[in-house]
Amino acid sequence: MTESTVTLPVTTAEIQRLLPHRYPFLLVDRVVELEPNKRVLAYKNVSCNEPFFNGHFPGNPVMPGVLVVEALAQAGGLLTQLSADPANPQTETFYLVKVDNAKFSRMVVPGDKLELEVELKRRIRNMAQYVGIARVDGEQVACAEILCAAAAKQ
Image (cartoon, rainbow, N blue to C red):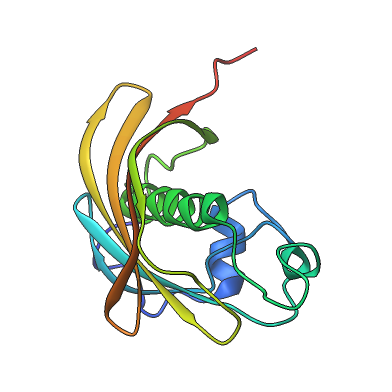
């Protein structure tokens, strides 16, 4: 999609069209800002009904940090998909292949609105490198550098 064809906010139905993830692993609910090929701002509404809260941790639910990083990676995937030329849509599935400099500074708990801001650092052939910051109420809760790559065609 180009900037002129993307209508914001991008809702869950459109996100499901763009990403292969489904419940319980779709971790982006809405895209609210987009600068094609530059940055995206998306949200994940963290509900007390998330299945991972049953075991992480009983009586003290905390969203696993690895899922916060996965949410950032999914937001990066949406940046790539929403930036694609409609005449040449992105058809490959990108996979998370590397995470660097991940830092967690606050727990994410039920009721939080997780803000996912992701910038495209660079795109080379079948790989994309992103820098992501996750926030709750404007306060950083996590950050990471993420590398995703398209699977080799079989």
